[in-house]
Length: 123
Picture (cartoon, rainbow, N blue to C red):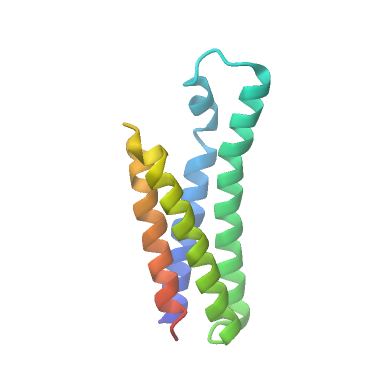
């Protein structure tokens, strides 16, 4: 059951990474006329979160496949869960305070994934 929870968390996080990458162009366009440097930084930061999510999803998947029911897997789940909770808190205090619904969804999705990993890491 722990592996199933970990795979669900990995799937949610990985899909959330895709949801960051796909709209990057329209997100940047939404800022209107900004300098080229600001545009580059915005693209970098938007895609950096996508890469972070994909990296977490890949790590969860590999650790679960290779060493599922081990203390190493349990600690990996816990560390990633804490990182997801930090990102959820950051988003809750920044982007989620805007009118953009996806920023409001983000803390819920990240917290749900973190809880799944924490439960999986108890095994």
